[in-house]
Image (cartoon, rainbow, N blue to C red; front, side, top):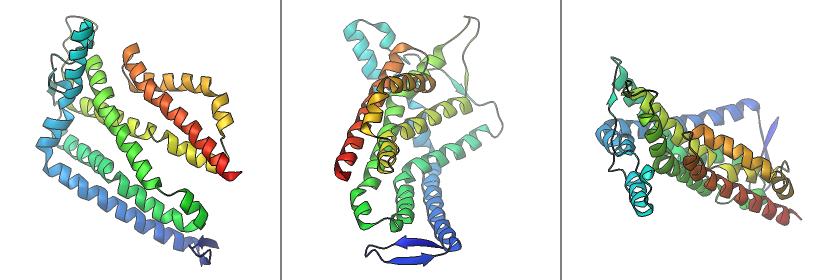
Length: 271
């Protein structure tokens, strides 16, 4: 028999099947939210693709303009990225339609993320004591905020750098880059989602610290090791050039330091 804790610290017996039934409805509502936002994205596909998805490869994209202006100021021409946009083609009969559906679903997940986490929190929170609920206040807001910041960071910084490097790289002048639509979309969506998940690092540290699995001293001890891991992670999600990796490493290192502060505060409250 499983128990759930109410705000009055009264325990109500729930069977395993009761938990599964409740979890099922939380999942159903989350899926419905994803589908609703995916349908909206599907309907406004012209704006989604022309203004959002395909924009990072054009000179008019905000990041490309700012880096190009910085390059002119510093007299570093290599900072002027995506000055000549490459052509994106479709080589599959159902390629554009399947890509349309995939992008709509990904956007549905991203936009619905705060609601999905809220449903998850509604399922978990009754099992917490009142004090635990109070200490976790704002979890939905901060988790959603960090995820959205990660998505924006990936979209405005990593995506244009990745698109520029991979789209302009060639092994021979005789080989012309004509990028497949699915390949381009896969790169953009994977980078954006990976960035959103990575920015949840302080949240992971919070729950690990609450569970007593990590401490501020532990995180400080392995700070040098974390730098190596972050560098490796940055190398995976960015093009293989030092400038891009440094731009990605800096916020990740900052998030790690934030995690140390969070762990220290949790320890201070528990003593």
